[in-house]
Image (tube, rainbow, N blue to C red):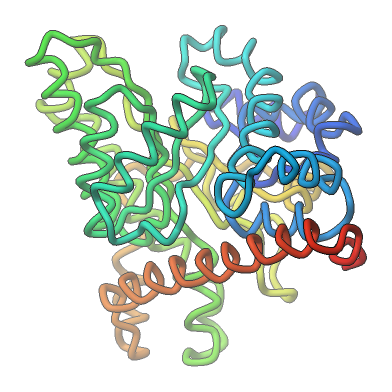
Length: 364
């Protein structure tokens, strides 16, 4: 087992893979990551599936078979995705069992076209989780104004949720409040308080967004500051009387997950966001390239400060540079939904092409 990844686990942080494809499952790569690199879960999103299905022929036969059975569009995609995720969930099942359900998770996102539709999001989350028939599968719901009430209702109904596309402390707190309200309601209703959830804070997109607008010395510092500020809110919440009451009733924490941790700046260290977010009780989900880089030459330094460290001072510097972090958080969330919606349309188009003209869309 790799010494660098093992060190992260020793301090209480989980490493998840931000990728999934049929090739990863069939060629044993995911199993190797689990055995050799301490990977204990994975995440997926529409962009990941668009690349996996649209580039190469690994899904062609399955697409044609499902089409012959009358499936098309979103229904056909979810049949493909659920097949992959069931296989991945089964690989992680021993970890899920050994950790009492805390770790060993895979994630599937509802259609990004539902981002502003609370009712249909709730329905989709319940339907997809039931169809998956795996206890260790999270349904991903974006933390939009319409998504947050869907998170609460889904968790109250017993559906494990990964709250995605969070970009700020305030976004995280809204997700955490939804989780706690749902657990409080379950306790009041006499239901089991153990419904797992994670809250996914996106990091690198902050630095990409401001790169052209700031002085060079400030590059690749904003995402880390936002994360440090949010980690303080996370730890403050876990220390609160409200959460302690839920924990005493048997609830598990909604863990904070660091997402979008692949370095986008070629001039920055390829392990930048892994080394910056060494934080007990959290998850870092990373693409293959970043995982392999960290395993090869990453360094595990001191754990992130629970008091926010220098985050507020750095954020004050960015405000002097003209960055409104509240407005930018809202903008990043909107752009995240738009990007996933674009990938969703491309994904469905690729599937349609493969049905109409098999093999044509496999060369990319």
